[in-house]
Length: 339
Image 1 (cartoon, one colour):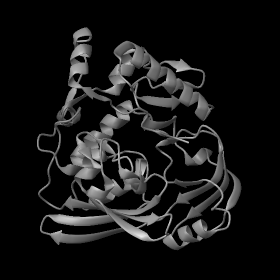
Image 2 (cartoon, helix red, strand yellow):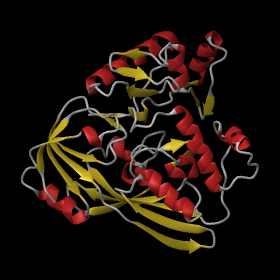
Image 3 (cartoon, rainbow, N blue to C red):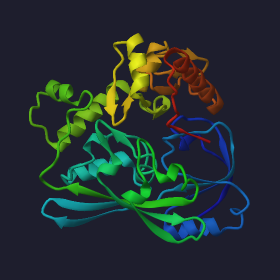
C-alpha cells in the first residue's frame, strides 16, 4: 500500500469533478486498512473513505487522507431449502454483485439493478428502487470501529434504517468503515415485485406475463437506461434529491392548488416525487453554465459540459431547492453527500 500526495480524484467521483486529495491510498485488505489508519499522517487530518464515488459531490479539494476501499470477495452459505446468505466485500461493484446473484438465481436484489456505487455504501443510505430497499434483505454488516480499530457487527436494528437513512449517516457518521455486507436471498420461491413504477408496463412491452427475477432485472435496467444518463458519458450521481414526505394536512393544502400532484401514502406522511416538483418549477432540461437538470429526469443533476466544479453543481441545486420551496412550500433535501 502506497500513500500518494496531491492525488487527482477526477476519476474517483461519478460527477467527474476535478479536485484532488492531499493524501490518497488504495486499500485491498483489512490489514492494509488498519495500517493506513495507524500511519502517522492520519491522526491530525480529516479522513474520507471512498467507494465507487457515486453518491458524493466534492465542492473543493480534500485536505486530508482519502482511502479508496477496494476490498473484494463474495461468499455464500445455504441456510434452508429456499434461503441463502450471500456476503460481499465493501469494494465489490453493486451492479456486478446483483448480476452475480441473478446468475445464481438468488432473488431479492433484482429491483435494485443498475444502481451505481459499491456494496459497502449500500447500507449507508439504505439504497432503494422500484419498491425494494436494502433493509428488505439485509442481515448484517461487519464494520471497523475507527476509535478502537476493532471489527464489530451491525444487524438491521442497529443500523436503524429509514428512507435513504441509516445510523452511518447520523450518530455513526465518521465512526465506522463498512467492511462487508450480508444479505438473505431466496433460491427458488422468489417474491416478484412488479407493481412499482413502470416495471409492469415494461414487462408487457417485452411480452412477459410471468417474469423471472432475471426478467424483472432486465425491465429495471431498461427503465433506468431510458431516463438516466450514464455517468461515464455525462457526470452525475443519480438522484440528487430525496423524495420528500410531508404531513397529510400539508399535502391536502398543496393538493387543493395542484390536484394532479402524484403522491404515495407513507404512514402518517405522504411521499411526493421530487422529480415532479422540480419539473413543475421549470428545471427539467434547464442548463446554467456547466450544470443542468437532465432532460429526461429532472431529479438528476448533470455535469453537462464535463467542466463543472462541485460548487457550481451545489449552487445549482440550491436554486432548485429555493424554487420548490417558493412554489409548493416543500423542503427538498439533498440525497448526495456534500464534501
